Amino acid sequence: MAALVVLSAAPGATIQDAGRPGWLHAGVPPSGALDPTAHAAANLAVGNDPRAATLEVPVGSLRVRAAAAVMVSIDGEPAVLLGERGELVVPPCERAVRYLAVRGGFDVEPVLGSRATLLVAKLGGWQGRAVRAGDVLPVGAPSGRAPGSVIPAPSDPGEDPVLRVVPGPHLARFPEGVFDRFLEMPWRVSVQSNRVGTRLEAVPGLPVHGDDRARPAPMIRGAVQITTDGTPIVLGPDHPVTGGYPVIAVVTRASQALLARLRAKRVVRFARAPSV
Image (tube, rainbow, N blue to C red; front, side, top):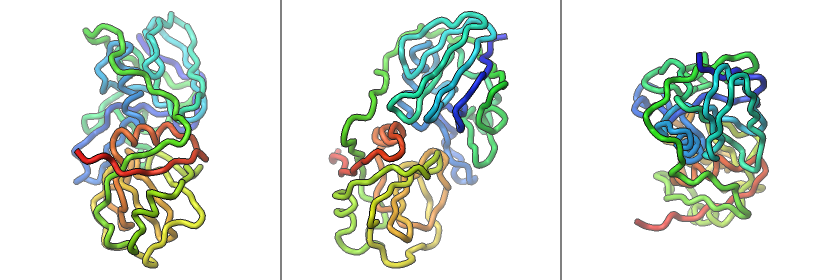
């Protein structure tokens, strides 16, 4: 049987695919890859559909052993054949998240049309949890696609990364000029970040009108909520489907992938996305 045996894994390593859109009305966020570009590049390198399930590896390393010969790629690097009982290490790098794709994809049971792991609900992926040493992850049958990446592998975040945003729907709930200040300020990625959202830090934070929580409004990935102490939280793929904090901006899809690559304590700025 084609499978990868997990020998060691970074905390929070999960099986992810392109996500499960269309279930927000039922209280289920989309989940899926934090960095869709790297995820798709890894899949295409081994001849998978770009939406196939991969292993998402957050900061740290992953070591696996092949139960049978399989073709693998890390982040879209040229595919290599991992022989039976061959071992592979996904090492850490400057990016905060990496992807291991195997030809045929990880063949776990789909839930609501997706193999993505939603940790907060213990749903999907491998038993609804992060993978750990001893797990035997089944691999599916190869598709008819030929290996060979058509998406460039992701680059490491450069100096002074800039995230593009569009103004959010709740600007009227902030004091005048706060959106411009939000764009001018440098922000630091907090260690208190996860797949639900990336918390950003600055001292002081943004001025707000006291406790500005309101009736819950629908939320989407990339929404930048501002908490009562002026702290921004950029919602990730496992975001809550509603929220009461005001949304000052929405990060573009391309910049969501860039944000996913930033380790904690990296400094980032925001800028308006060009008008289409």
